[in-house]
Length: 159
Ligand code: HEM
Image 1: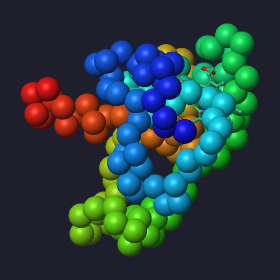
Image 2 (image 1 turned 90 degrees about the vertical axis):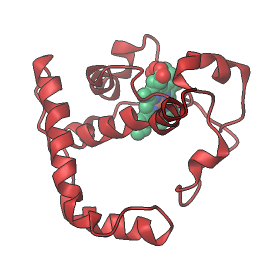
Image 3 (image 1 turned 60 degrees about the vertical axis):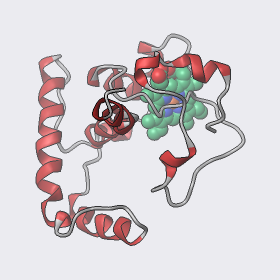
Image 4 (image 1 turned 30 degrees about the horizontal axis):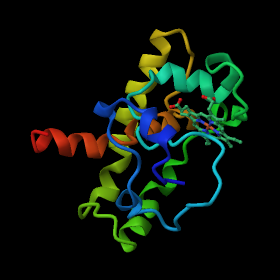
């Protein structure tokens, strides 16, 4: 639900970008808009918290966010990222208009592994023993990306 409620407009510092805009959902198939939402808008959440915050939050939301009603997702710490389907997922996304460059499906797992190792090493430095193959690592990578394209665009335009 991306309507500009006052609380959502105020939620992020202006430097984090504005509330979500419809165009940012252009590659979502199907769209997951609804008329009710329980948790906050996560579209600018990239960079708002440390990777370790997300790690703890998805495991025990109330530990880092007092009184949270968000459910825990413990299986993300046990299940492994399925890298055997990366190429077919990229090909599928390309058919619905996501502009992956030609041949990227063959290199994507290299990028995935580099990014996952970086995140897992950072978590390990904070005492969180994580395999770079764990699904939570992929989710953290995703969450830390949200809102970043808009910010990069603004820097490019000197805004
Ligand atoms: C994979 C699924 C989910 C992810 C990745 C996720 C992620 C997050 C993140 C990153 C925040 C912090 C936002 C911020 O403070 O800027 C948050 C907050 C919240 N989420 Fe979730 N969430 C998920 C599922 C859910 C579900 C199913 C519910 C409700 C039934 C929920 C309810 C809430 C609520 C109430 C908050 C505010 C309190 C808090 O910080 O814990 N979330 N969620």
